[in-house]
Image 1 (cartoon, rainbow, N blue to C red):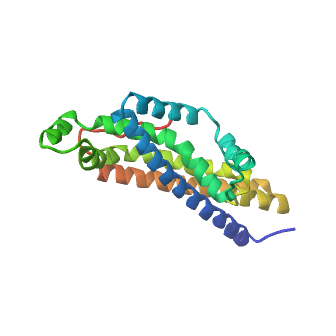
Image 2: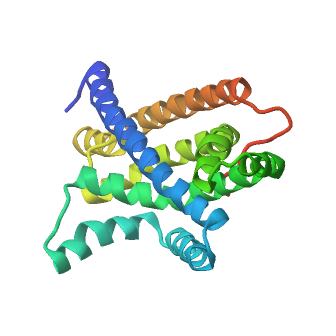
Image 3: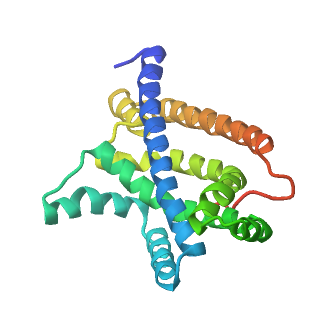
Length: 224
């Protein structure tokens, strides 16, 4: 059996679209949770700080595949509540990424000059107003390079969603290989698509990093 390269490419690009959708939704879910964890670590009391640190260490210590299986198989068997594979992948990948994004945002928040915070407080601003209007706008700019790097990792990690049935880029490549028995060609095409996307993101990250750079301050922490 054979298939035209145009048809194979069409299937792979459909899978790439799903991978991009999954990665974007996951990175923003992780951003919301990660920012909250970072704020708890920097500005929370002792109890909140320990909760945030415990969450971060626990999530980073669990493989993404295990998180997927817990969400997709274990929780439904106990609670009766289940999610479709795509939603499960978003939640699992978002939770996993949040533990790394919290490090990025924590480093960025701590990079904001203390003098600005003291000046804002002396003007009568509340702690939340200082965080919202002084710290976060600068911290998000500082964190941008590290955050974009995290996005490329999240994008590549979408391939693991194949384990719970998400039809993303890797799943489409596997489908083509199983039917047409040309692994080098179809996995190679999938790898090339991943590479083009990642390099494009890297270029965009460099451009945005220079555009929004705060002179004298670097980017946040990146995932090791």
